[in-house]
Length: 232
Image 1 (tube, rainbow, N blue to C red):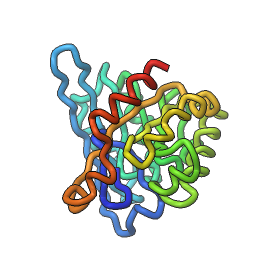
Image 2 (image 1 turned 45 degrees about the horizontal axis):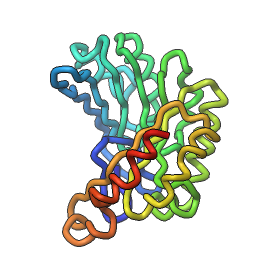
Image 3 (image 1 turned 30 degrees about the vertical axis):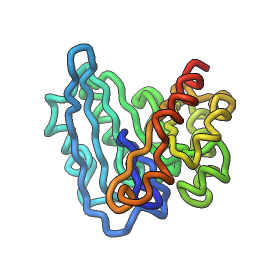
């Protein structure tokens, strides 16, 4: 996930605003097995690095599934990015994955839901759509994710819920937005969120050298806020 200052989160999510996806991205979809340790479930992560691409769904986005059939079966599948809904054949890929027998399928999205994605799939083939917000208000979220992103994401969540999809929410905690996390439980109820994930921000590249104190939440700050919120 990318945002101002080239920050990223430790969990692979599709969390960039539309403006942050550059033009001319090469077509490419990678399927990786997430090896589980004893007592932990093995999963597969599909990373979509494309805003389109050549070929059909079977030859293009469907190819990695067909070429990695050994990953299918009773394990969860998470399709991430970049923003996976930028690919026009994502819906077909989800249907292919469902036929392969994955235990569950989740799409990570910034909420823009390009290519009329909700009309490409149904709740019967897609288990969860996981949306990303980095603030409980338009002011804080848009400062991190771009102007208009809060409204677009909330509208996407409402549209998905209205069509019967189960939705989850990802909140990346930083020093910029940790003060708003107390308002999240109310927002979750309002938006009818089924699952909620809190993740810590990770800094990469130049931002890691001089910006860590501006973004990173200290261990003490995390312990003071997050455990109590999780209990709610």
